Image (cartoon, rainbow, N blue to C red):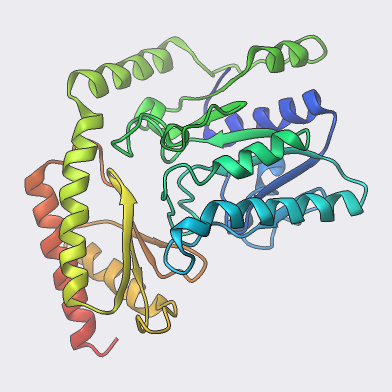
Length: 326
């Protein structure tokens, strides 16, 4: 089903999930972002408290690659999901869906270990709900080792939502799902989108797929992203203010901490680095619950010379922060 924005894609996915399961409950991570319509803003706690959440929405902790051992990530996520479902049922609400951005970008970017999502996905299905993979940020070859974020975890979602990268900035998005889900919805509801999937949007989407294939951008994300990650790890070896470097392909994160002994978030340093890099021609942002994680998501066409420039500007920013006593 074609739409124009990721918000619309998640909105229709939510409607279909609730229609198919005849349930209302949805579980999301604590700092998730899934869109701006009234329905999906309720699923987007990262927007703040302006949009109230009804009891049918429950929040769970996202993975924490720095503070939780890799071997425990999957079990903890599944346990938190089980608790949220139990609390939901105590209020007479049944779970319809568990929706996640499969790289947890708004929660601080936690892609690894690959496969840790499986126990939570198995659980939501066993409890009668659907698994919705929000691929707006990790999808379309960005992680390098897979075309979709959910593929890194060996998963086949019940529904997949797509957004911005689908048209390389042109308004094009969509929702894909198991056929029985959309068939059930179509038998009792009408849906149309005046501009969704129009000929110009479709041409843009086809061009994106052609360029990804013809220019080998998935392999480029793996190769250049790997070099960028290695370079950031080299910087981290010289700056203990960097608690962790993580990511996949051309989607990376650098977590700023006050001390590696405590791993306490250092939002002030992250803000300084973001602004210093901006003043020197490189745009990144900060994310995560402590606003201390540098979010690095460059264009898929990034080449090695640009990656080297990025690393120079990044190290200069950390040096300037240290000199300023940040």
